[in-house]
Length: 220
Image (cartoon, rainbow, N blue to C red; front, side, top):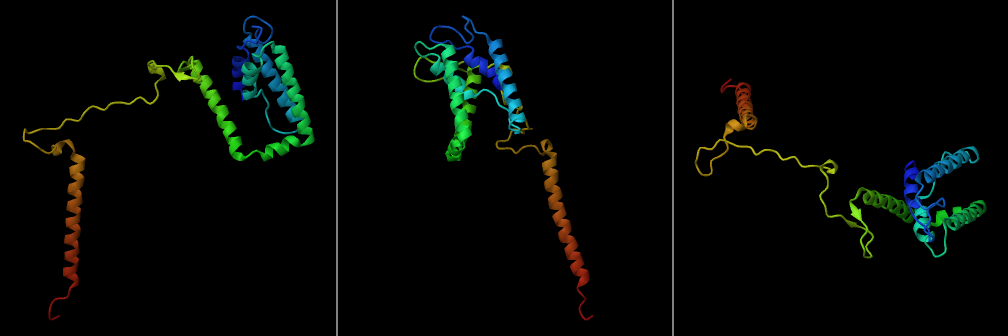
């Protein structure tokens, strides 16, 4: 959960509202202020969850909601960051009422398991896209496509799974067309074959020897 302390300021701290101001009322991003507020709220809510509810659950800022507020609400005409945060407070009060009445639990149980899994996967993909965008692997095109890959060489230090080329094995060639590989280059293989054939011959000879001694002579 600690990633939200870094990711939340990068989302809501770098977005401007309709008036051109950043979160906090300044004309420039104030990421330390947003990060401190995110960590403070997460710490207070986690302590309250343990003291009041006696439940081992950590709470922090929701990842999907902050992006919706930053890019879907704060950018609306005549909308400021103060108005957007006021809507978030109202949304929290509504959620509190739904929790106290038990309606939220009923809705949560009514959501299919596949939808819950899809939500978790979607959040993971969203984080992945943000990481790829910040790392420079993808970029925002001018068209309707959300992102597209950058056509450039990946630095060698970022390459994963490099293929190591093994040197070609050379064998002795006597000049004849279709000559077989020299047995000297593969002593283990040929020695194993010889031991296998020799062991089979010895076992067959031992079996014949036992049969000869176990068979009584004629007229005995």
